[in-house]
Length: 193
Image (cartoon, rainbow, N blue to C red; front, side):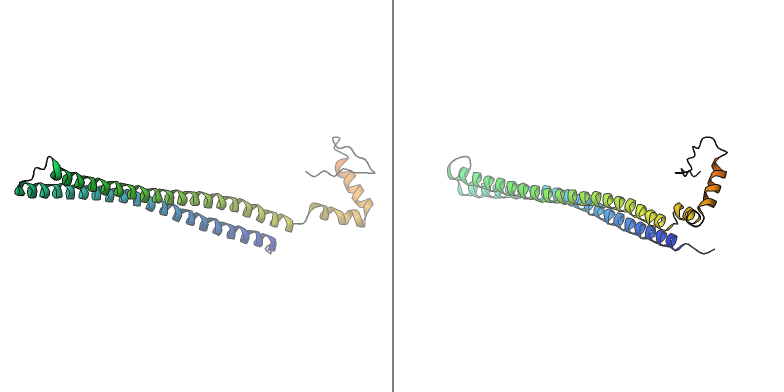
């Protein structure tokens, strides 16, 4: 038996649809992986921020300790006047450095969180599009296959057109035994079972 070319085309269309579906899912998987990487960068940025804050605090302690030792060696009282002002200025500068570090880290973390969200949204949209394309492709291939089949009326029409009385007698013979069919010889009802 020969293969139906319409069937071959429909199977090919389904194959292409499945390949596109798998490619889209691979793209979505890659976007999910990129989202995980962006989330890892958030954690990395937080760790880096904590390290920088610790470094700033350590530098402040060392600077203030050095300043107090120098003031003490010079006989300056660090609890009042210019000695206190110098220590306060050092603490203020350290606080500004901490604030700037926290602000920059928060901004960077927010950027990575948005990047992760965008990748997750992209993955979801790609998966939804892939699913829609899969359904559309299968329906299209099915329609393509069905369009290639011979319609039922083509099988009946030649008998009707070439020999109407033969068609009518075959019809009456088949359905006259069944009382559930109402026959009108002028306008027959075609019922197929």
